[in-house]
Length: 212
Image: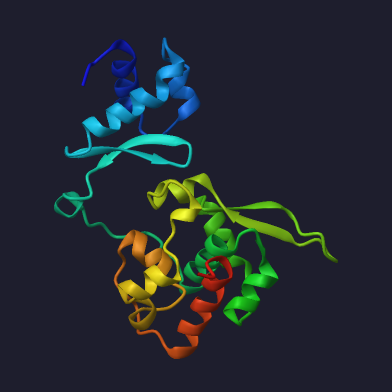
C-alpha cells in the first residue's frame, strides 16, 4: 500500500476523532477529492487484519476494535439505566417497520404504551419523528437515526437480519421474540424464554418487510 499525503490525512483524522466522521468532511481535507473512494478502500483493506478495523456506518467512517478480539477487550460496568422490555420491543418494531406511527406500534405489540418508551429512545438518540402520516389526526411517524446505525455497527437499515436469518440462528425459537433484534447487536443475555404468541408476532412484522 502506497502511503500518500491524502491517505495520511484520512488516517490521522479518523484516529483523532472520537466519533464517526462524515464522508464529506473527510473529502474536504483531501487534495485529490476524486480519489476518495479508492483511498478509503485501500485504508480499509490495510486495517482489515489488524487490531482495529475501518468501518462504514451510514455515511460515516470510524476505527473500531476488530471483531476477532473484542471479547478480550470487553470492560464490564454497571449500567445506569437499562432499556425496558417495552422500549426494546418498540425499538425493534420501528427498525423493521419505519416509518411507523405510535398506534401501529401498539397494534403490533398488542398493548397500549405510555410515553416512557418513546421518550427514552429519543433521549438515547436512536429514534426521531419524521413527518406525519396523512390520515385523520396526522399522527407522528417514527424512524431510526444515524446514531442507531452507528451504535449497532451496520452500514444501513437493510443490513438488519431478516426472518430467515433469525430462524437459521435459532433466535425465533429460543429467545424473547421482539427483543431479539436488539439482543443480536449488543449481546445482552436473554431475559426469558419466548412463547408461541411472541414468536408469531415477530414473524408477522418481519415478514411485512422481508416477504422472502
